[in-house]
Image 1 (cartoon, rainbow, N blue to C red):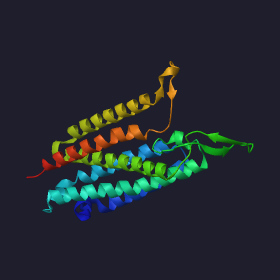
Image 2: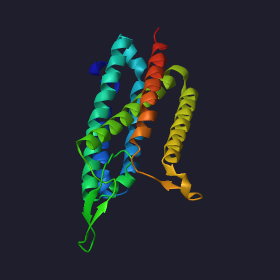
Image 3: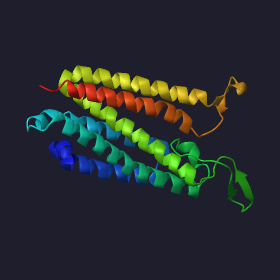
Image 4: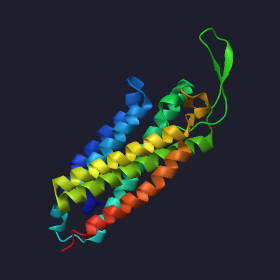
Length: 236
């Protein structure tokens, strides 16, 4: 399964994964906020899978059954997403342990309950919604995992569309995906604002897991279906 999918660009995909894992795991410790590195890693994952799936003709020319290739794509996407989710979750949890305010800069991180902290003068105080436990860590992993699954499937869909329908269709599909993602992010942001404070509403929480799951789960199903349908069109 892996061989069928990875055969056209095995080395490139492995190198891309290692670079992404390093960026996702250590980038936030060096510069920027966690969410910026999350978005960068998701975007790069989509690009990596778009590139490798656009080489589907090379695989089909070797008489590899499309079903075998699709199975390899699915397993590779799940493995890619799971490993990067472990890296992202670990980095986010460490950052939150270092500062209870980190969660406001990484919306993939799920927190729950208060957290005891001390200010620069050594005086103790409590930070609301900054605590973590096993459940929040698992939910954080789930959010990361689904985000990467969605990204890889979107990339695979775009790559197959480019092969089957041409560059123009691929560009249009990217534009539609970006419009959908931007619309979803706007909805997520608006749904968590306290509008009673208008004209300057503020976020009521930095925990967006419910909104993310509401968007990501149907997004993955749609992306997976479109990828499968596009791939089926490539069969002789």
